[in-house]
Length: 281
Ligand code: PD2
Ligand code: ZN
Image (tube, rainbow, N blue to C red; front, side, top):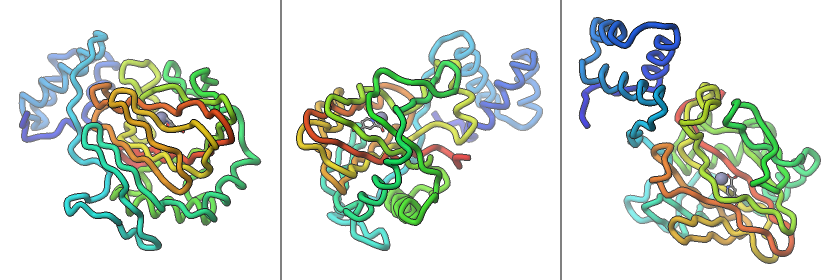
């Protein structure tokens, strides 16, 4: 669809706020037209919001601008300033890329050491309320670093921003997870479900998640792969390696359902970087 004018997240939010404040759809349509919005943009934006309000899932438009490395020349390595990251495997639909030599052994050790002291049973964002809650689907222990919290975190975040061509400020703080034997993360999507009542609150901090990078800091002896059930893919949790995947709309059609398979022996540690549409505040 070529509308000539983009329906920005800000426009969507503005329309939603006006409706919540009691303005009628015809009056909104009139003020949007008066403000210079093309009729079709106003109609599409309003139809989407009305559909959502009526509990009907509007078909989300895929984003065009997405994080990810430039693979146009099929590189085997990508220079990210302080190291050359290997491109080990790529998939198009879903977009999945496995990177090697992404995190050094020393960086893995330093992240684990700093995180170990602060582990607590993992919380996931509670989409009912926008708060956090214990989640039975995730039996790992975890914590979050602030963005740039220490030198190793800051260096890794800069490397990720360069590699994925996405502003550092659009990233959430690094999450660290530890899986003991038996622990797993059942298949889920990382984007926030547009149908959940808590989602608008979550989206205020930087919009949707659009991509994930899971980096393996310590490999278990057995089990613990990252699985993509829709496409029968399993990525081995090799230390220093990272699996990147992106989703251009918050929709299962992206085929980015993924999980952490149960650890069968040993301990698995990962660092996850989630990327948002906008600056994450
Ligand atoms: O640890 C993993 O393999 C894993 C799997 C699925 C991590 C995440 N999701 C995540 O952090 O979102
Ligand atoms: Zn996940």
